[in-house]
Image 1 (tube, rainbow, N blue to C red):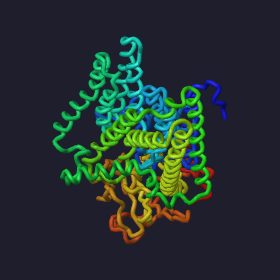
Image 2 (spheres, one colour; image 1 turned 45 degrees about the vertical axis):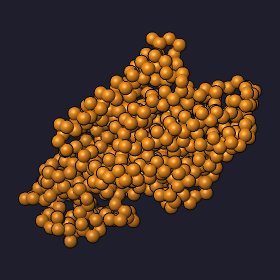
Image 3 (cartoon, helix red, strand yellow; image 1 turned 45 degrees about the horizontal axis):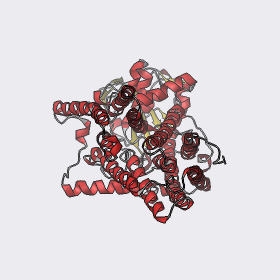
Amino acid sequence: MISPRIAVPPIVIVAPAYLLLVLIMWLPFNLCSGMPYETTFLYNSETLPFWDGFFYQADPLRIHTNTFYHLSYALGEISGMAGSFLPFQVIYAILWWARGLLAFLIARCLLPEYPVMSFSAGSFIIVHASDGALQWVGQLNQFGFLFWMMLAFYLFLEGLHCSKERAGWYFIGAASVCQYMSLWSYESQLFVILVAPACLLAMPHYRSARHWRAISAWYLVPVVYIGLTINKYMEAGGQTYQESILRTDWSVASLLGDLLFNMSASLQFWQWDDSVQVYLADQRQTALVFLAGAIYGVVVWYLALVAARKDVRTSMIPDAYILGVALGAGLLFLAASFPAYLILNSARSLWRTQFLSGIGAALVLVAAMGLVARAVGQGRKSAFVMALLGVLVVSYGAHAALGKSRFHRFIWERHRVVMNEILDVIPTVRRDTLFVLTNVPKDADPFRHNMWFDFALRLAYPGKEVAGVYFYEDHSAGPGNNMRLEGGKWVWDGTQMPPKVREIEARNTLLIRYDAKGQSQLLKIPPPGIAALSTLQPAADLERTVIAHTPSPRALRRYRPCTDWIFAGAR
């Protein structure tokens, strides 16, 4: 270990430590994991002009939702990995690491004398694992808007700390741009953005006239966003997607109960792995959990030794007032993380609703640990308590994150195997083809909705005009089936997401019977029992539709088998 006598800036130790924490949780299962859902972003990148791919035209107030999806796509094109999901995973990991590092830098701006506290805050944000969608790369935008928000906070603080006010305004202007990128990607962080500057006012040295001017400027972007949002919903007349999923019980007791439930779930690190226990029984995963805890403990101890060289009595843990402010700010941030989710009918789902709360949870946990450490004593004794308590949080977080990563890998494999089977049976097709997939297991649906089957086909046969529907083993249609056989043609029934081809000749139908044992077949005669196919005539000339060539290289990179070191022995 580096001697504490050597003057090494904390960032030199902290940045690699955060990278190791992310790699421990990300690397085992994600090198070969992909996107069974949310593939509309990838499809847009593949079909739109390059620069248009960065923008989500469907919603002007989420215009930057596509940013990091398209950046990932571009990385794949540049690196020669077009079609692979690995570039998406790499960007996901970078954003994960950057969020923790920005948290450390923000904490250092506010409390430069306490590197242990700053490092712990960043570590806890990285390992925060209460959200069930953690490690699903389809939620790349969640990490994206958090990155922009954290970068905005950091630039704003740098602007406040500039010795010259004019130079500070450049930083504050850059922070406003980051606010814009964040809010015009997603809306849930609005309340956190609104309360953040108010927390600074609890510290007397942020109450000067200059600071008041800067804080006022901070609110310009969110005020514009609020105005545009109000106008959007007034003009929509209740027809937006968001309004279709609103809760029905608006009682104060119900809202407060949901808020407390979510705040508790975000803080109870020992329960973060409850939903993925079945995916945690692996000795290699356990070893990685111990490694994560060890990395945190070693870095805390090193930073504590460096701090002790300066002043054992004052440089280890902040005083009770500062810890109290941090605790209060953490609780405020935590509460502000949920209003946008509390209005939904899925307020207690713990799915995509907990990412934002990692910031407040980290502040609360760090402040609480600091208070306990101060109560125990000063110097190395308090550092030992901080390290011990922090190791528990990091270990539980890494444990839960690995379980969720493995869970999402299983979901991806279920989807990938089916698409790979389809490519084996039908390497490529001519234009205007409708796929009918039968015998899909209902209790292990690899698509969950016909829209995701339809988009998977578009990605499996790039450049082709294809659409698809699927049926379960019991002959019932998959959810969202919106193609109907009428008068010798498949036609879109006008519901759900429109298919790429809204009208296809029935003779261009390809019937595939899926087999979980790898014996999927291309059928000439519709299977009996499926009413929707009762009028479909037997295929007369499959060669007219199926082209016996090698599948597209993009499709192969997406759906062919890929092995990584833990998952290979865990299926």
